[in-house]
Length: 480
Ligand SMILES: *Cc1c(COP(=O)(O)O)cnc(C)c1O
Image (cartoon, rainbow, N blue to C red; front, side, top):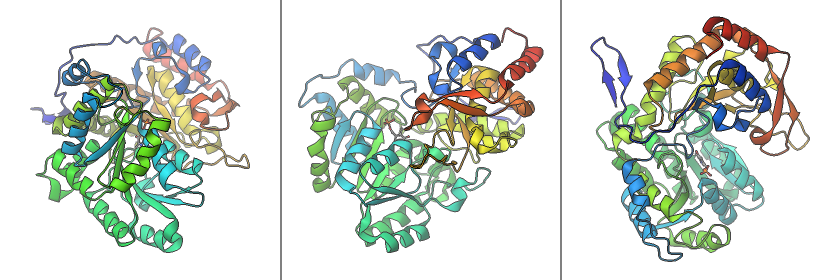
């Protein structure tokens, strides 16, 4: 929810109160300078004790509700036939509308099973946009990914409300070109890698019509489904008076298989696959005990199954579905007003700073998004995530593949941070923007061949971190 104050300002409002807290510290500049060097200028390698606000990801870092924690205490640890699974299946039926479901250990495990069953060498999976793990599993099974996002989707400065939409003309053309090689169509809610951007109900309906006409299964990645539903309610006039639950159920009516990571909208951990198609279900189920576990736990702890079941129900409350979105909107609007280049409109999951426009003096081979993430840590103690060329591995010939976008992503975990945290982040990023000419590039010193963004180590080109630190200390002092 957001509230209009008497001076006209609109601010996001926390519709919960804090009952358990975790202590954080703000390490001073000299400490941060050392810590980021030790981490090879890769924010993935920073230990939590060196971090003030952890905005790396919203995955598994959300605050649970009292009801979720309570449910974890009554879980049933049976290997087979667990009551916890029965409660999960009931939540899936009520919220998503599907009769058949299986838990998996997390979202990528669902992607693994789907690729195993549906993707063969030569297969093509058409999607609005890829997610790292979804692409990896499709390619490991010998398939390729075809991204059919509308052209507007990759424009970082935009007013288009549904930048996660699939381009229906591109979809028809792809079906014409690839025919039966298309294993399935994948729609990802609140499209992660283009900045948490939603697709509209109208677009999903259009995709469904084309998929049905050609008998192609439609698979829905629902990891961030409640945020996409919230943005449909806000931005698609026909749905203004619908509840989040009604929007989700209409969406599910169009899809053949849904899967999700329980670490995001559901504010738990684990994942699941659900469908009403018995034949698809049985083909997936065959592999579940091989890779995940028995049908009623699928590699999850029963405590997390209980938390996910409650989380699925709670994400249908408007205040829960919109909890991060309202803060992200405030975060993005404030930065934009201060002249900082951010991805607009604000989406779900995170505030994304556009590193190509923030650091226009850096060539893309010096990793502007990685340099910006390191500089944000120096300026604030906040951990963000590089989403750009470092996150894109080299091709098979060893050439650098330049990413479409260079973004530093500041995730807003659901119900974790408060207004003053967001104000602080806005202030320090705005300060950094004033000093942007001081920020230089990065180069690899240790570069793993696969998913290099996780473990790769880099070094600054020149001594820019020291110079940036000096400018900071001159203005704010050595203590902060
Ligand atoms: C996080 C995520 C996944 C993968 O889920 P994990 O639980 O991290 O394995 C897949 N798709 C989307 C859209 C995600 O955000």
